[in-house]
Amino acid sequence: MSDTLQENATLKPMPVPRRLVVLILSSTVILPRLSGSSGEEYQVAVQAGVPVKMRDGVTLVADIYRPTTPGKFPVLLQRTPYNRRDAASGTFLASRGYVVVLQDTRGRFDSRGEFYPFRYEAQDGYDTVEWVSSLEYSTGQVGMFGGSYVGATQMLAASANPPHLTAIFPYVTASEYYEGWTYQSGGLMQWFVSSWTTGLTLDTLLKKTGARSQSKEWVEQMPVEKYPLLSVPPATDLAPYFRDWIEHERSDDYWRQWKVSDHYHEMSVKALHSGGWHDIFLKGSIANFVDMRSKAATAAAREGQRLLVGPWAHAATSAEGKIGDVVFGRDAVLNMNQAILQWNDYA
Image (cartoon, rainbow, N blue to C red; front, side):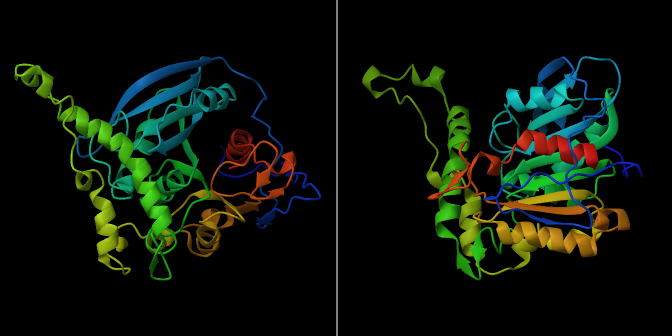
């Protein structure tokens, strides 16, 4: 990733099929053909379960994929609550000349601490970016990528302005976590926040149930038919944030803790904001682009904002490019790994 494009670099638009409608907003076309620097492919080494200590002492866990070739490489970082283990993407991206770090966010899967959506993502994002930038095989340039909540981990990390974060690629994500994520024009987005919370609580349930296990003590209890098997925590202990969201039904100081728009003027990263015409967070993707383009901290950051919108929904597009009842065709499917490479080669 370079700070600026060389003057002789040529940016070519991606081919747009007849049935594919893609909106690209920028002063220049956003995605060049994949250069991959030299185009060389590298063998990849993997370090699994690497501990990363945050400023408050909590340890998060990451997997690192890197070229085996000696030298320094730019870093691609993903911080996710949905399980970091993605060997296919990690290996592919690393084989194209990047150090790839995939991390479980606080309180998720192998990472320690308590998970509370949005609360720790700015500070943990800052600490992780600066940690990966200092790795002996890192050039010190860090890009982030991913969609939905993984887009939120990028926006919140960028709001803390870590010095070595140069580019982000937030895909199908929101600009605020009150309006457009939890509430819409004052109304609770009940289906989304309820179903999303249920999905999140499965890992939390496993962790908390394991922590409450006292099998050595239980086995001494008689009669054996009363062996409890498990001690399950009450449902209210699994996601206290859900009750907080219901209680704070207005955009108050609770939501202001992680209000992204309050920090656009502090952000100094280039960004490819990508959204889907059929995605729940489309307005947020557009808002992030528009406001960072006008308010980001530096001229380079303001000029480095790009927007890509296509016929996508929040869930993955099928192989044939079908969204709802409409088949847009295979050319309408966004190749995410290629897009990650193209954007970071450019940025």
